[in-house]
Length: 116
Image (cartoon, rainbow, N blue to C red; front, side, top):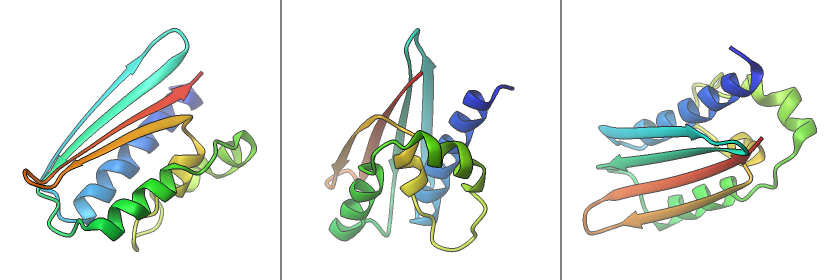
């Protein structure tokens, strides 16, 4: 598996772990590679611990600008900490994201784009 594919697996793992950490018992992911990008979608249901402060935290973490130098050095560190999961490395490994939270149905949807 090449490094780019390993990074995608780490990103998906970080997002999935984050959702399970905050109470989700139903997480679905999908990734698709195009000629110039990798698209990752995640849907998590029943996040029992999700509130406005956590939504803000997710947005802040994913808004970190992509930084190739840091990405190359630190991508292997993601998933190594058993404490509160952080998404800042994910933010540094993607180019853009959208996040939607349906409070009524308790569904979080995140879509990430990583240019290659």
